[in-house]
Length: 141
Image 1 (tube, rainbow, N blue to C red):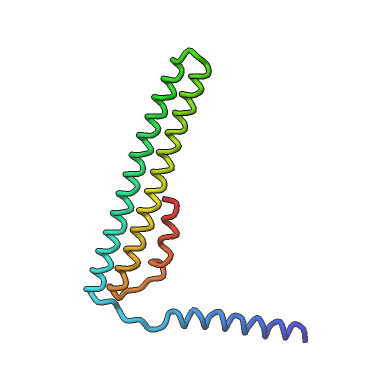
Image 2: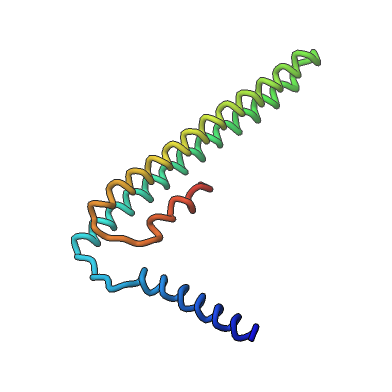
């Protein structure tokens, strides 16, 4: 008796799980060529913006690292211990400020690129669940 109840409940849960998948699939029409061109243009625009953002961020970080390197190396030429420590702290502090500003700008540009894409894609009349989840993948950029 107990096994029968478990089998019935298991069977019902499998049917319910499958019914939601079938409901989501539905019958969809093929997108028009104009809609495909529209979304392809927006993808190109979004990803080019994201690529440019990473280049800009990388350049800023490289310059910050080089400035920190040079300032830290120069600090060792200071004979007085306290002054040397001040110079070293300043080198790290300046590096930290530049790095925070670069990361903030990078995040702002990434969010703007995805917001623009989300707003503009609604005119294309195409849909894919991956378009909704895509910005989560780019959070690590």
